[in-house]
Image 1: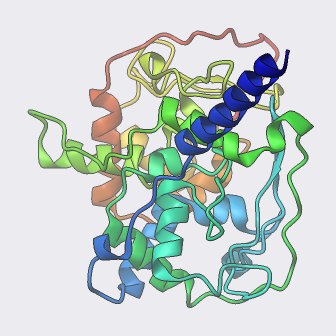
Image 2 (image 1 turned 180 degrees about the vertical axis):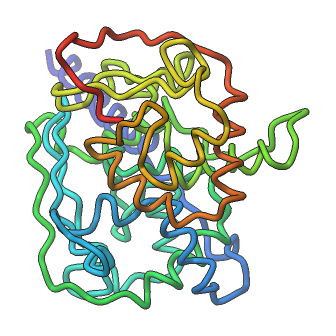
Length: 313
């Protein structure tokens, strides 16, 4: 019995060590950062392309108030309710004390300054595709924004999902830590659109359905799905009959610029906030996004839209 207990103890310690090793954060080093201070003007553009204010501004914020990134918006999911944190320049409650490399690792690797994992409600799985220089520029701009002294509220999650270290296993399954790679055979316009959609724009975070573990079902990328809170549907944005097949390139670009759809309707739900940020992009970039979306393989939606329910997009 004593030998059995010793063996069991050794196996237990070995299991903990293996778990700790496998869940170790994958981070970017200071040596990998570009040797430039960051461009605030370029960072402003990336800020809107990335939709930072869509999640981190206070609920109900309008106009310039959206640049006060005190957080507080709640997002209900099958795993619990996530609360957007304060990412203002406040040094106590926000990210004002973060170094450049800490900011880059948070955005592109989902790793906090204390080396803990962020939950993938933060779209770092898309942001991993961004250029490091774009993220450095983003920080340069965000450093100019006002401080908000509002403490971040804790997420409302079941006990099972509060062990952040376990998120390292989730990342092993779904992250490849690769930057954006130009699409073979595609022109500059489509590749620019692909970068914006799959990187800073993180469109697939909502428009790609998720599996039981919360991982993206990449075979059905951009085909839409149910809202995480179960109260609506997210539309298909592939050129399928159930998606945007009937939309022209100008229809797509115009909708992102104005919020008005070809059917004389408007965006709804969280897409309103996304569109308000996208409207800040140049006509050329909106056209690039349209070109990329129309180049996607058409895919049917794997969900059924209730007859009396209106989509959020």
